[in-house]
Length: 82
Image 1 (tube, rainbow, N blue to C red):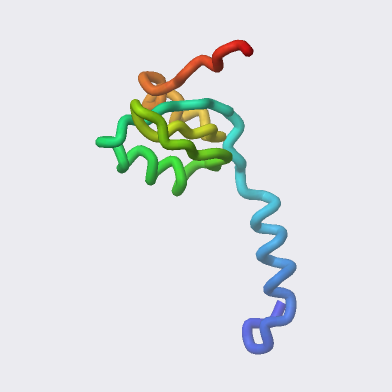
Image 2 (image 1 turned 120 degrees about the horizontal axis):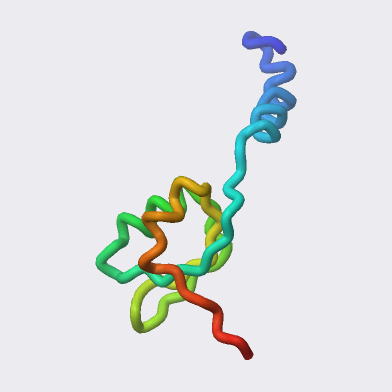
């Protein structure tokens, strides 16, 4: 890798990305509209797969790290069987 020419930087970034941990817990949550801070943190620290706006708040299907589950527990929804 060369800091001067940039040769190898793309490969280094790919290797780093491959080694970073990924969120492994999938949840569906409805976060009240007054908890925009929590929605923002999900975008920053998790992987937001879907976002919908419902009467009770922002409904998100997310992948998060285990350490985030306790904070989200009050907002977890059980999917309704169809």
